[in-house]
Image 1 (cartoon, rainbow, N blue to C red):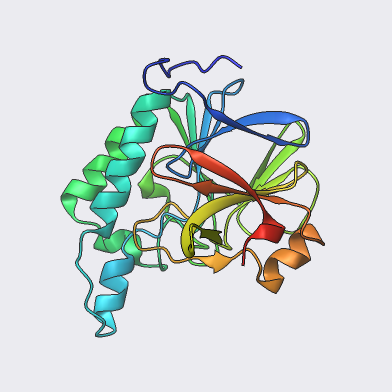
Image 2 (image 1 turned 30 degrees about the vertical axis):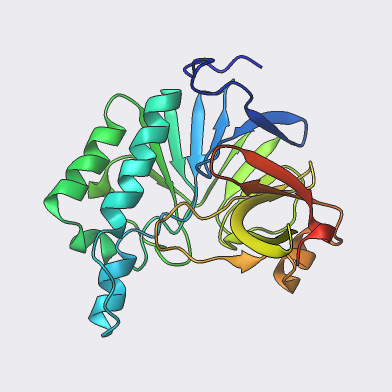
Length: 234
């Protein structure tokens, strides 16, 4: 696979995850890149989660949106995609977009400049306003792949929503990290947002998607992904 905008010095051995016969690059950031379509996909940004919690008296540092958008800008710069798709729950609640500070709104505008931008609606943000820029869709089909927020287990599906994470035993201790979950026919993406939590891939919600433990956790490491059988995780 030739990666359009990634130099060998930056990304020597990309991790390729195949979904329904379509090869996709799984980035260590938690993004997916479809080189043939020049499409970058991220899921569950949960922008303004900090301010949402603050409104309920749970005080968190109010920098999650800035941190998430900065990470996204880095990935966009690495791949230079023609299209970016945010796969649902881009905002933590229905009014979160109204709480964006000017700098974060400008960051979104800069990310959208010169490329197509697709917002997939999620359960946290089912009614995104048109003034955010880009196109709002419930789901999108491209070839053998369908992108949607909530997974159904259908073949060719790439979804988010579940925030997969894997707990892996290593050297006498356990490490817990976000991951892609895939069996080659479907995939669930990790949450990209700085404050987004995670759900163990051994939870029954994943059993409903994959029907067995015959799938792989592509665990996000510090510099690369680690492919680990779901049956080895707990």
